[in-house]
Every structure is written in C-alpha cells, then in structure tokens.
Length: 310
Image (cartoon, rainbow, N blue to C red; front, side, top):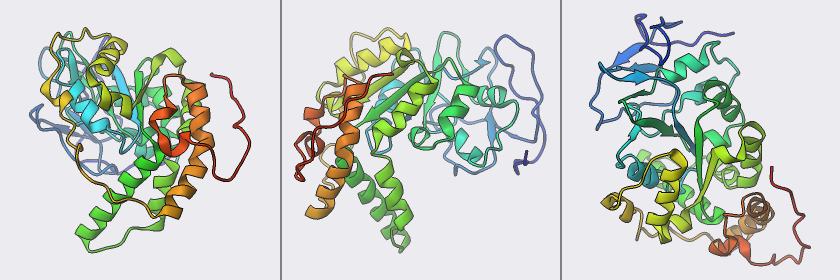
C-alpha cells in the first residue's frame, strides 16, 4: 500500500468514544480554529486533524451528505447546522476525506482516522456533506468501511438545471482565471446528473432506511416541512421556529444562462430514462417538478423499463 505525503510531525489523535487515545499511523497536523470559521483546503492537501476540546469526544460522523453538487446542499447544510443539537465538523461542510483514496490506497485504520475528524459537544450530532461522494465509484465503499452506521443524505434537482448551474459555475471560475472550461469538466458535469446510476450502488451498501433522499424543488417550495423531515431522520427534534437562513436560499433570483436548444434537448433525452428509474426507486421524487425529463421523449421511444426498489 502506497504512503501518502502528509504533514510534519506525528501527534496523538483525539480520544475516540469508548476507547483510549491512539497514535496517528503517519504524521498529521493538529488544527485549532474557531467553530464558526471552518477551514477551506484543497481536497488533496495533507490530512489535518482538528483539536478535540476538553469535555468533547470524537467518533464516526452521525450523518454524511453524499450528493449532489449544485443541488442546494450548501443552503440545506448551512440551515441544518443552525438547529440545536446539530453540529458541523471544524473542517467545514465538505471534508472530501475519501477523494484522496482514488487509487485504492486507503489506510488500514480508515475508520479511526475518519472518526478523528469529528469532535463534538455532548448531546450533539456532527457530520459533513461532500457532494461528490455519490459520483465517485470508490467513495461509498470506503464510507461503508469508515462509518457504516452514519445516516446518509442526498439532494437531487432537475438534472438539466443542475448541469446548467454547474456549467455556469465552471465558466465563471474559468473567466476569473483567464482560462477556459475543460472538456473533462463538462463530462464530469454530465455524469453527476445520472442520479439513478449512482444511488442504486449506495443502496447496495447501505439499507434504504439509512438514506434520506431530498428533492431540491420540494425543499425550495416548502423548506420548513422538508427540514422537519430531515431533522426527524437525524433524530433531532425540530424547533417551533425555523432559522432565518432556511427561508433565504442565497441562489434565489440568480439567473443562470440558458443552454442552447439542441444541447438542452440532448441532455434531456440522455437523462430521461435514468430519472424515471430514480422515481421508481425513490417514490418521494416527484418528476412533475422536473419538466426537462418528465415530458415524453421527442424521439418517440417506448416506455421506460421498470425497476424494483432495492
């Protein structure tokens, strides 16, 4: 197994719940940062372990959001953490822990290492939401090894709208760099909209009742009800009054450029079957909220083959 280049000096990791302090199997950096200012680091930066304050404990995350990019996950996560009893990792919303193991070089003590990233106060739950986990074929398998009891959350939106939002972001970032969007980035943006293909593999590894599937359009239309559903799934009692952040989706009103007609139509054709299979797998998905894929195919194909829920 290959060794990863990590930080400078070996230090003891934080005590895990139910066990004595352990020593890191390779050098790591300790971090001390206010909880309100999570760290933002490249996904392939040396792994850093946050401090575990006195009276806190570390352990596997209670919840992990696994998808999907440009589907409102930042808004939902930021709203969740404002509820009493829900805490975020000091590393911020997106830990990207499993990204670095794409070559199959995960450590033998992956569960202990992942757990060390989640200090929490007593009577609080803690977790993260890295939207690309569901899209990376190795990530969910490793998540199963590292945190088999974690409750998983995933949020989807109309796949053509998701692609349009992703491409607009890619173009904006490229313009800021004085560069261009890469074709590999566009291919990745297309793949992320094949929700059924990704989610069915999650259900191969995690029981259905351990995964909460959210639909962005439902959440935007009735955020209070959907957040109450989220809280109950996490085992947290929702308060009488929701946080103001929940009612203020910061992307509301931002106009994303439309796709050229043939591009949008081709994407809709490619996503249509996958989206219908997703709705059969997850009846909570309302395809009428996704007009790009709910209408009949313009190519006159037959009906989509049904699939049983796993």
